[in-house]
Length: 85
Image 1 (cartoon, rainbow, N blue to C red):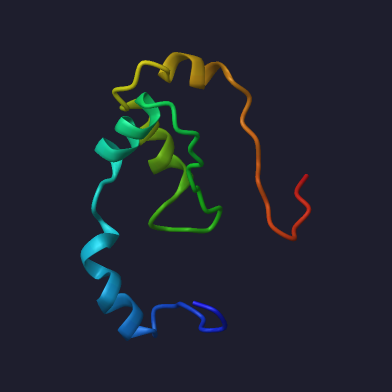
Image 2: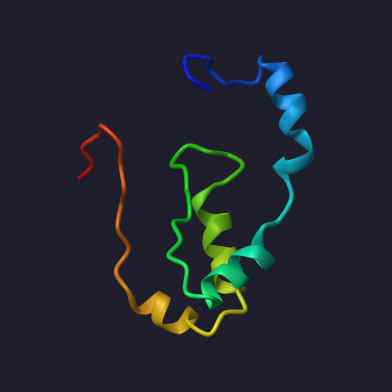
């Protein structure tokens, strides 16, 4: 938060978030999508917990009426203060 860097050595941060790290939010995501909420799914390029492959797998298993249309759309990279190819 703010100017505090999170990394493996920040045990106080990890211990406060540890109960939520591996919890699935898929049921909430399905409910929000079905209700028409716009949603951004984070997929960190170098993130070992919330990685791209795991997110794509989760998306393929969503129970949501708009999933076929979703996969017909072009993907878009969103970057902050970085130019990507």
